[in-house]
Image (cartoon, rainbow, N blue to C red; front, side, top):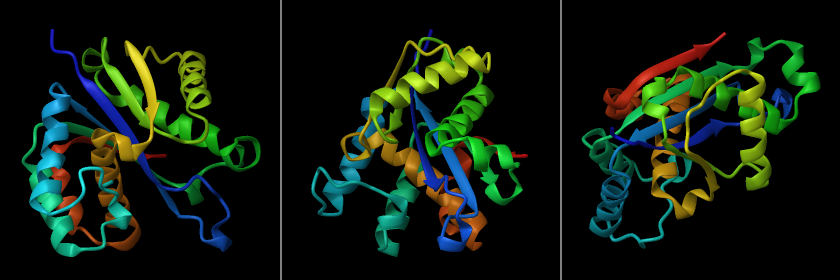
Length: 206
């Protein structure tokens, strides 16, 4: 049986303070690969060919060079991975989210909701790596607790929380999430078009 490695990241924020710049949309994206080292090597080659440090952190919103962004996304569009994503318009959420849930609660709710949508056979005995969102141990433990409470049998053998700059797979998830947010929040479809063939499902949460 093929075992997958998953990695997830988000784009936008979980704040509801729209008057002070909170994003209208929040996106969670998860990628999956059966060859994590090979996929990491794809970004290593882009760094080397672009004259970037090997520790360079690819972040969608920090990637201001259009030429570099197109090179990275075109390369990833031909790479071997699948992606699933969820987008929510926070202005449509009920007061429960705004009044009774912490930022971590909101984040993990949508992470768990996305995990529920990924085929269970792909999750079985897999590794899930998430970007840091506060304390890594609290994030991991709260996600497990929430999935149990929501009766989501995640199937992962291990869940790990790491800093994105130390894990290229998280950076790829960030690029997927950022391309979706850019499409819906700013009507800029160029980045999304380069990665859309990798997305197996894009859920619009209601």
